[in-house]
Image (cartoon, rainbow, N blue to C red):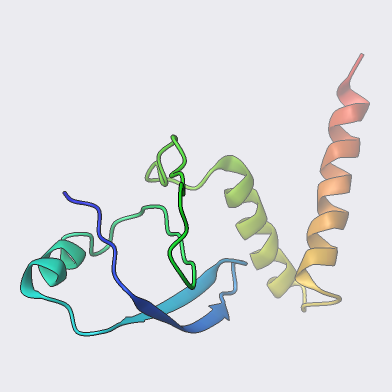
Amino acid sequence: MNPVQFPALLDGISTKKDGSFKVVIETQELAGSEAADLLSYRQSMGWVTFTPNATPNIEVPKEDAFTGQKSPSQRLRAVLHVLWEQRGKKGTSEEFYRIKMEQIIEGIKEQLE
């Protein structure tokens, strides 16, 4: 598949309950081949670079954008967010996350020799 590059408008940004973001990008009308290239990436993960003008020497990270699974830390954060919701959303999700992570860290430290 070919890399796709096109002028676009960053139309919207919103947060999701798991802490991730939804980014809406609107294009101008695309030629048939450009549209086909773009559509070939539907439901694919990749790296996105947005700049208001041409920027020389932009590098794409060498690692894959997505392995098909959440990392263990992403999974833990998501599970802690659900626990925060189930316990009545006291404080912010971030405060709850930090408190729980500190409890986990202290519990592991107690197991160290």
